Length: 289
Length: 271
Image (cartoon, rainbow over all chains, first blue to last red):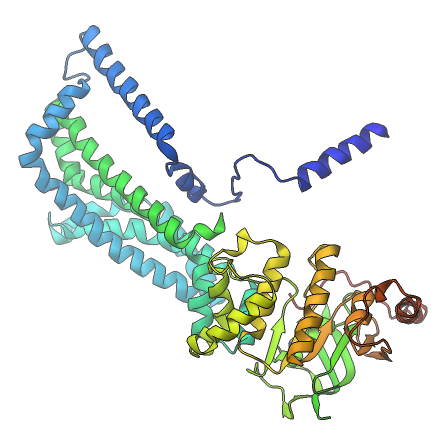
């Protein structure tokens, strides 16, 4: 009896006394990327020093280990060899960088635009949404990269099959997350807007859309990363251009320093997507934390 | 005195999965200009349903309701509603929340700037204009929602258990605040609450509703001095009225139980 009382008191304390631990927003059943996004944002110089220190230890250890064990460069290159390869191959690689970036940008803008538009329209018509959802799931779960050889048969080794593949990879990701966002209907907030005589469009633009923004942000991030993966993979399939193509090329020649240098460029694009989306989220969707 | 709110035998039936729900039945109420009335009743008796109906947020099934002589059909500028929760938009700062109605109505915010400044001062929120709702306490949020409702100067204020979510101390503070605002602006106010003490303290008249389907049970004229003297809520004459109203509500519930028409109000019909 007494113990039970104490337990209850403990529970009450936990519930009512503000916690000084860092608040981690809870979400269920969805990719919890926005939480990770905010965890990545940098607070203070101590954290910067820590991050740089880890990088120095890892890169230094890698360099030292490979040198000490005398691992040949075609098996595993040193960071310095990769850096050298990156600088020396720049004059030829940079055009491939911009080709992949262009595929990604064009495909992403088309895919994300269509995905967002469809999410906004479909959620207004629940029955239509139910009909379309299985097909969107099909698009989400099918690796659209499998379509690239088919597209190349019709369009040749141009940039177009790649743009379409990126759009097909990014669009459904943006859409499925945005749909989750637009489905969050807060009746009290909609009633509030209606009580001032809001039109359907005003309710959409001033209530539903801002309410959906955190999930749209997640969709745009996931879509961007999926788009990048698809762009690089599409490069590998055929033709003679793009970063993926260079990865396959250097790998076939066992030029591992160059191989890693190209991967570094791909990572740079990926990290840029992450940083941009974190900034977008911070500006437009930080209210949810 | 002219009648501002004129409710004539309104009913509201919801369609639910378990068949029609009679939330409100043949309820009538007249409120004169500048009057302050409260509507009380057991939970689920249709108080919120009535208020949403008067705002034009949902249609009433039968009967007629007039506000300022015009039948209620859709939300109108002359009527402001304050909700159960502060209901601020978390992605807007306090000032943007307060100007939200003006934005929806496509009216110039600058014309109301001075008015909003005075209102903020009267609820002691000056200096918090650029804070976001999550940075404000529950009481501050609800004060902001009052400023929001008053910002466009509606003639009628409908309040739906506005302080239900606040702690007892903050609630008392808010009651005093709302009386101050009423005294200054002389708005016509209809205040829904399940706290009889609050209703008696605030209102000139208290409409008691029966359990669902909510209909008129009895109306009390509150014969207490205005402005309410300090410590009135500790006095016998105040307690007597409160006790009488409580007794009436208990009797209504017991009568329905005897007749077998009472349903426990486990779920809300509106939100």
